[in-house]
Image (cartoon, rainbow, N blue to C red; front, side):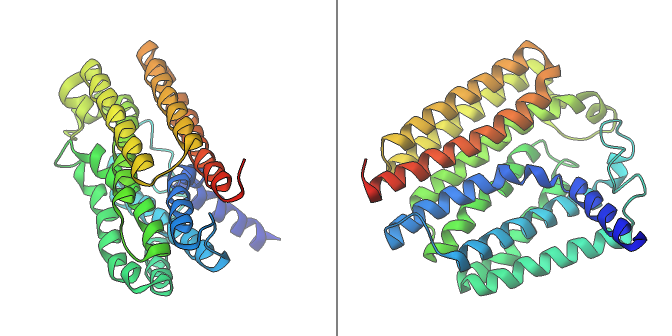
Length: 298
């Protein structure tokens, strides 16, 4: 029983380490890409169990590596920040050797899964991992870290399209650019919580450079760009009315997110975790139902 308890505790600690529940931020948009790509290749919004499972394995392993590497690289920062000093990577629950092994294993799984998807996915697997790792360094020398994080999450729909189509169509670039600016926009809001810590520790972030008010406006601009790119995606992919309705709801949710934070920064966790999670689900469902409507009629 002690072995089972130890294993269960380790799984819980690693899940907390990578904030596994937040995988939804990435999964919604890779699923959107897979649905649209499957419609164009197979005529139905389904690619089959084999490719679906491979894509999910690739998503989870890539995200685990990105989060694990970030926790590994930021140990010296996290241990001094009151918001992060209880993370398993710095409070002793996960040893350094275990953290390194976790990262190596997930990187290996991602490359191996990419090999079984197709050769384009395999050839891009290591560059993708390097981009994911690069994010962990950016805050140490550039305030562009918010947009680099956006690039990292924006790779998810690109990966989904590559898995189904073996190429990168224009609509998937628009979808990924929308994710880039969506993520940058909410990361700008989230980083407001660390404004004083970043200043004191000479870390680079937009809030530390420009203050809260200007950060709010930059975040709003990013979310306007996100809606613009997602509009181009829906148009370029020739999606229907339900997709446009989902796009409109997503725009309203981003407005609500901006409103919450503008009222008081104490609402940042609610704006970050709740609103963004529902946005991805709603946008995905609208595109899935739009595709099903196109196949099976009204």
